[in-house]
Image (cartoon, rainbow, N blue to C red):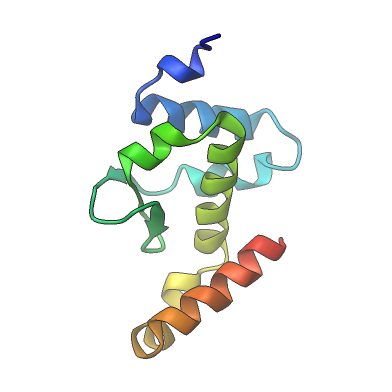
Length: 111
């Protein structure tokens, strides 16, 4: 059975997730951060990532996610922004890109 979410475009799905955040007592804390910057759709990466302001999403990846899964992805990227991972650790990320990404994902996923 198809839901409204299943028929949404990638852009519409991200808007719906941001609305979901505003209606949830815990995730509402992230709703402002989630709305900072632009959502950029690109095939240059397999999933999603942030530069600390904007979030880049692979549109095919977004379309493969359930609403619950996409909430996690948006929360994950929002936490990177909220924790200022891309700005506070910019030099470390340049020097040790793989290790720093793993370490920052570990912190975000633990939250």
